[in-house]
Amino acid sequence: MIYPVIWWPVTAEIPTHTNSCAWMLTHMLRSYDCVHYANFTQPSTTERAVIIIHGQVAWTQNVLQAIHILNEQMSKMKGVILISIGDETCEFPYALLQHSNLKLWLQTAKPGVVKASRYLIEGFPELTPERLAQVGDVERDLDWSFAGQICHSRRVEMVEVLRKLRKESLSALIETSGFQQGLPILDYLKLLKRTKVAPCPSGAAVDSFRVYEALESGCIPVLDAHTPDEIDGYWTLVFGQGHPFTVIHDWFHFPTVLDRLLERWPKGQAATQAFWAKYKSEFMDWLAEDWGSL
Image (cartoon, rainbow, N blue to C red; front, side, top):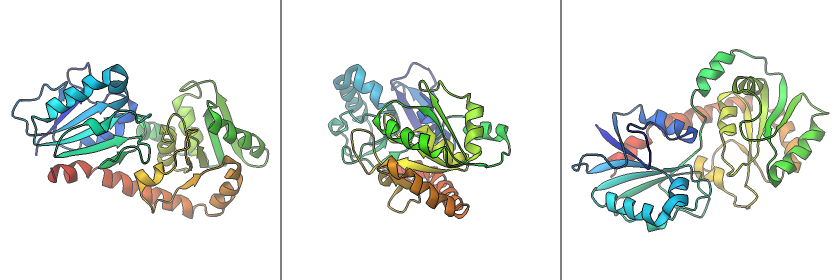
């Protein structure tokens, strides 16, 4: 089975992924027999295709033109899997897309705003597993750790709690000046491998690399319920009702959550890792499942 994959809009002649947020998607596509095209250069005989757009880029540049181009190109096909990555604000007008046999995969969706066939997580950046292997075995001697910027009200609430809590626990708190301006990546991953519980406050969206870097490092992440705009329900949307993660609505309660998670260690860690392994395995089958039903 050959899967035509169209990346739009991109500048590379043979794109593989547009940025770090597409790495897990790229990894999944590499497990299939895909042929990649840039900017609708696929053969005119293509009846079904995967189309990957950067929703935020398309929205900010010329959204009406983007919708027109997508609808025109999709009208030539019998079935389409349209994958929108990077749209953290979820403002692209997906409702204007027109196709009778369309499956939408949407990354960092806002619950209740757009209905999609699949909801993509941000995932971990490229080379994370290899870098963790490079770090090697590390004693997990910290109850919790956080390294990151304090850039909005949710993080301010969290860090005020963490500053007090670090006096009472084995921990590390590193406040940085901006995105990717903190620890070198290997030092950051080593810190996570030393950590049992990793608080994961929201950024522009509640989803972030931090969650999956923590999972890949063997931590138990504590997930943020919402961003400052107060839209709840994201983690149930992407992981389902039965996920094992603690989702925190008020960071004031983090010390209580931490005590409970440490009491359940290492059983809680084992349950979290089992869920994460199962999720990644099932994710790899999404393309075959949806393609077969087009």
